[in-house]
Image (cartoon, rainbow, N blue to C red; front, side, top):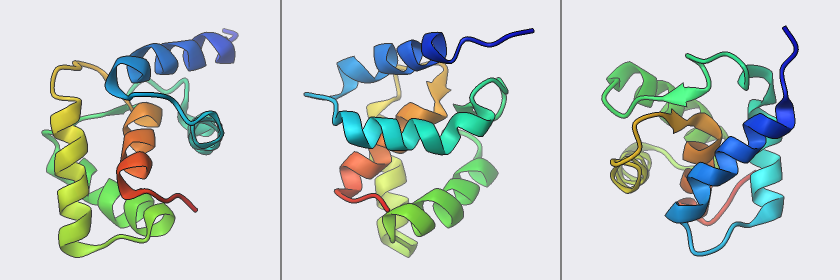
Length: 108
């Protein structure tokens, strides 16, 4: 089965746009590039804010490595993004990571 990367990216953008004032295209492209290997894996491409082990993985992986935050700062930023996306049933990982990076004000 062939996957349509552009269609998947369009879904991310559709979910992201109402959550932000404007989209930083460069940041968005970098985030999408970072999750491209899991883009078509339904389970891996979504984030569950009610799954503590998943949030720990995000905290110790993406937040620590790419945002340089740990401990309480990491907890706080997760809480902010989970709250911002509370009305979204299927939270795309690319959108979630974008919001984390935007909230942190940095991405490396």
